Each structure stands twice: as structure tokens, then as C-alpha cells.
Image 1 (cartoon, rainbow, N blue to C red):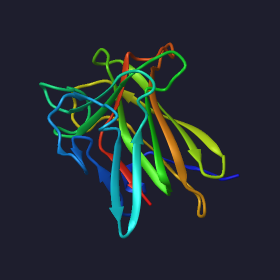
Image 2: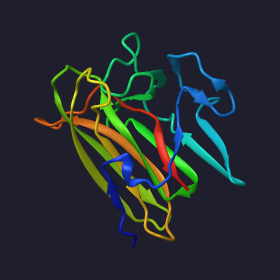
Image 3: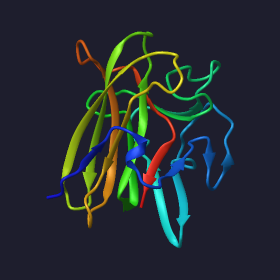
Length: 190
């Protein structure tokens, strides 16, 4: 089984591509905030002749696309970042993404809805093409400080790809899940 590596920084990706949730490759720039619907759940890319589909699971709680700004998602991402936010539901991690073909690396900064100053753990679950999986955490503090959200990503070993990732966040003190969890621009490598 694969030995999946945790990426705690975007610097761990050699030359990543980025998905800005507010700029859909087939629909163009999106007016935000807006709900993620079946027509918006898949982002298709042509990367040097390889077709890639990044699909947002919409079978759980409601999903929304917005932007980090004082008038929108006023959190700890960089100003202007595209934001993908999912509402928590019992037994499901709020943000679930799948990749076809599988990626060699993927990650994003993670935040949540809640009181400023609240300590949290960003949770990342990873599933690889060989059936192996891993769970990782990163510590953060909810704030309005731009660019302060923790990064959570994964890098698959050679010959194996990442097929699915799930993001969540819990209160550090009591492990209670937040009402909603958000990620910013997704970084990925084929």
C-alpha cells in the first residue's frame, strides 16, 4: 500500500496548477455567492493533452462558492481567494472532491464558520488509486487575518494517484464539528 505524504505548505508542490472556484473552466467567471449545482459541480481541464475532471460531491449538505472578502466569506484566506464552502451533516465530511484521472498531489487552505479566536483542527482524508488511505490534521485559529488559514494537502507516491479527498474542521477543545467548512483555491499536480 502507498505511503501518502502530508503537505503542510503549498511550497511542497513543485509546479502546481490552481483551481479558483469562482472561475469555472466551462462557465467562465461566476457571480458569487452561489450554490453548487449539478451544472457547476465538475471542473474540466485540458492539461497538456490530458483531460482532468475535478468533481465536487453535492450529495451531502449544501455547497456554496464565494470569495474571501469583508462582504462575503470574511475568514482567514487571502483577500480575493475563491472559496468552496460546505455545510456539515452528521457522518459526512463537508467538502468532498474526486479526481479523474487521479492526481499526484492536491491541497488547499482550510477554514470554517465560527467565532474569531476559536482554535480548530483542519481534517483531511485521502483515498488513493491503489485503495490506500490516510488521515491528516493541521492546526489553525479562526480569524480575519488574511492568509492565516492552515494548509492541508497530500502527495501520493510514484505510480499511485489521489482519487478523492475530504476536508472538515473541528473545534480543538472538544472535537465538535463546525456548521460549515471552507477551502480556498485548490492546488493540484497531475
